[in-house]
Image 1 (cartoon, rainbow, N blue to C red):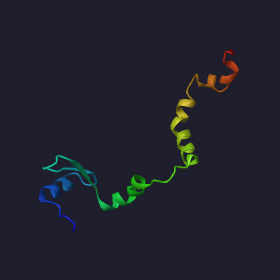
Image 2: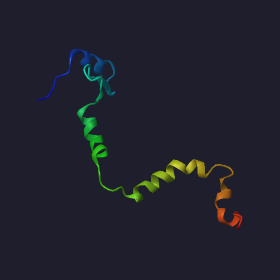
Image 3: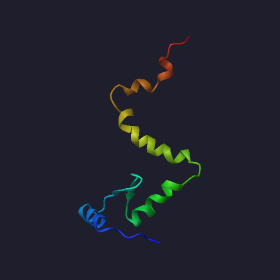
Image 4: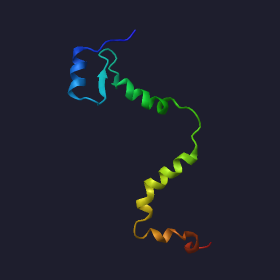
Length: 88
């Protein structure tokens, strides 16, 4: 069984095309997110992937995310951090 959109939902979708629609269950007050099926198909693997992550996939992302911080003035002091550490 596939429930049908109410006229209110159709108007809300038309007013904000391409955007997720928050829908509230009037009985339980639970909120749901209504998205197009094509969007769901794209994100479904991210939501239900229970495989072990491959750390190697994240290294390029981490490099890109922190590149500006690493190249910031003053950060060169960390390039040779161990040489400047006080020995106990």
